[in-house]
Each structure stands twice: as C-alpha cells, then as structure tokens.
Length: 159
Image (cartoon, rainbow, N blue to C red; front, side, top):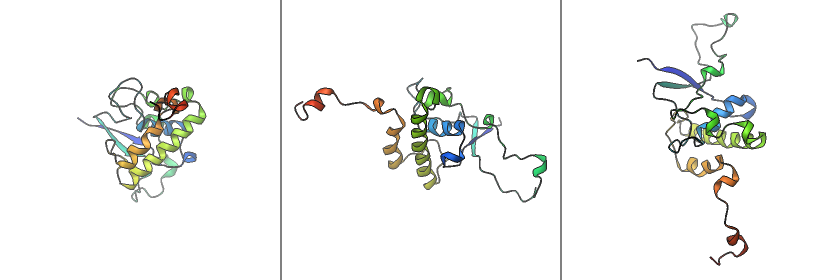
C-alpha cells in the first residue's frame, strides 16, 4: 500500500504563513474538541508528512517557466487528523476564536514548533519534552484553564 504525502508548514514567522497554515500549527498542539483521546493534530497511519520547504534539486536547474512544485495548494497540507476530525476541531477555528485569540495561539504554536525544531523532531507528532509540556496549557482559552473558586480569591488560605 502506498502512503500519500502531505505537507506541514516549515515557516516559523506569522507573516510567512497563511491563515490555513497557522491553523495547522495551532491544531497540532491543541486537543480535539470532538473526542477525548486526541491531544493534537496527528497524521493518519497512511499519511507521510514532509515539510513544505523547497528541496534542492540540481537536475532541474531553471525550469520555473513550467511551473513549480513548490506552489502547493492547501489540499497538499495535513488538515485532517488521525482521530477523523479537521483542524478546526483542534482549537484552530478563527471564526469561533476571534482574530486576537487565533493569533495568540498561533504565536504559542510557532514557539512549540521551535522547541521541536531545536530537537530535530518537527515531523515527529508524538515527541514531547518538558518545555513543550510546560507551554501546551497556553493553547487553550484562558477560562478553559480552570479559574479559581471565588471563595479562594476572597479568602485566600481559609479553605
């Protein structure tokens, strides 16, 4: 059985990523809202993931007039998780988050990807380390993180 190849965005600057590419980065580090088992976007078993950065190929020299393989459409990117849900179900739906929260999560996701790059693990969707575990709680809405009980705020240390 031949596996299909999909891409993962390699850029780590918000200005160099489209909204759909930012959504992929956010989804990778955000739990699925539609199932309990999924902790973030993962490729299905029959999918091979590669970075979208251009690969040097000296045999083609200058054939840009015929079109470039580097001009991928979003159909070429990983957008559906092994859990069966789309990136939007993984905390990456700008229309429900709002632009400010979407961009905040994008910045955190890019930082998480930088940790993965530092360890040469950007394409290992199961890899984690202490830095990643420590930053991942920021991939949820602030009110989702568990707010303190009002009694604890009004009477600290009295519980």
